[in-house]
Length: 178
Image (tube, rainbow, N blue to C red):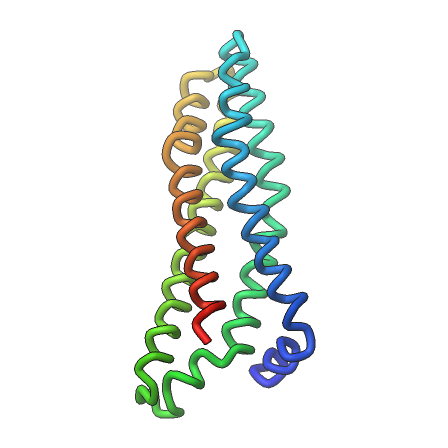
């Protein structure tokens, strides 16, 4: 499997890096657009119930759009991490550090992976909360729905935006490391 990823990356380096970057742009950019453009437009809807329904619907559409890109981001990240040989440059077969700088860069890879994993888990929770808000709206519980959607808009989306920007910065750092 490792050899296949190394070959795949060697043969399609540009395409894999492009897919990785465009996936990050769509995910993080989509959240930025939702939080800072669409959210403000939703606040202008006078009916609180209609506003909550529109927010929930827009989040559902956003999540449908970004989910394939999140999956693509993970796949391309694994291919790049293996294909670029970060581990092989940093440690030997026994796990002993063979190059301090390479180990530093390899640790960046892990930090970036952890950030994307946190973002992915946060996305899954947002999807769950949005689905719960929809159920509450159907039951007529706009207060409960507002509470769930409020968590997404006030805390969870901004957290993912910040983490996404940090991960993108780390990606640029890794790209320029060698």
